[in-house]
Image (cartoon, rainbow, N blue to C red; front, side):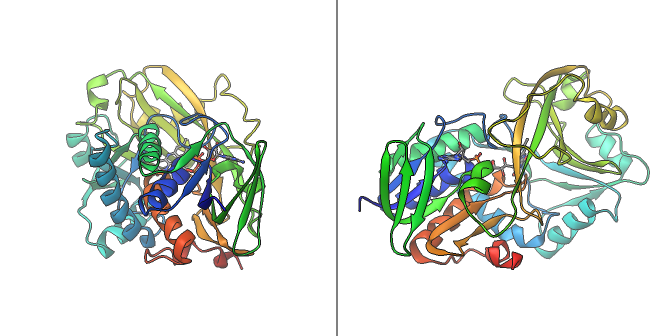
Length: 371
Ligand SMILES: Cc1cc2nc3c(=O)[nH]c(=O)nc-3n(C[C@H](O)[C@H](O)[C@H](O)COP(=O)(O)OP(=O)(O)OC[C@H]3O[C@@H](n4cnc5c(N)ncnc54)[C@H](O)[C@@H]3O)c2cc1C
């Protein structure tokens, strides 16, 4: 037995898990089918939103507060810029899922926030046009994570703590007898005491979980704004907008790129090994939403890319022990909102792999909820 823990997948969650395990002094092997940072999974595209007043469920807030601590710590350890706070707006009808859900979390956890009407939003953030029946919850601690930098930082720190990370090594199969796992790759069999499965969009094939995980194709666009100065982080917070046709979100122009925006969900279910590229005209749904709401944002599309969501039926994550193997951790299926949590999910995965439980409040992410 050469390793304490094998981590499969070194993307957002797996790189964090490898780091948290290695810093505890464990012998860790990380296996990744592609290169160190790549654009085939779910953790590319330069930017991700991080926010605290979580409309999806208040139970996420304690994990978010811990995630902020861990991102700050990782940033200090590596000297890399991982997080840029620029504030966030959650916009929609006051009784809708987004604003009322965010308000519930903000009040329950006394998070700093303000409720703004259309005129107040326009005065502070000139690019935004809310309709009279919409409201915005502003949270000052929301901002931008740089996902490729985050993954690189976790991988670097894991290796610095002694983890062995092997890239271009695909895991084909695994099995467990409850106290030992065997992992098969094209190069042979590796063994360890525990296994962490963090394979993102490939989890449906690999995890053998008793829940249906679906992989959803998403497309993000970068626009050249007509008024570039309105879409910089000092005048344009990150945002999510609830419209009658669905949710979309945006991120100000940073890192030399344009204003980024995308529809949240609404994509086709796909095979992660055969994702169709962006097709001409695919931006039209988004353009129609931007036209009235952020009219100066769309001066033409600058770039676009595809990315993958891995969804559970209730769109909450899975962070748990495997139901048939107490030494196998399943952590993934972040349902399109997991990047901000990757560092704390990695910490929880390290707890589960070493102690079989975690002091972090992850009970609501257990597989048991699916029966
Ligand atoms: C367009 C888009 C926008 C998003 N925006 C946000 C946002 O603003 N805020 C937010 O918090 N979240 C956001 N998310 C969600 C977030 O990015 C994902 O939840 C997160 O990146 C998932 O991380 P992961 O580790 O599960 O997957 P990944 O980072 O894809 O990692 C899985 C890794 O496993 C590897 N792997 C798979 N199979 C094998 C195998 N057999 N052997 C070895 N390695 C394997 C893959 O190559 C990959 O590197 C967004 C997602 C997308 C697609």
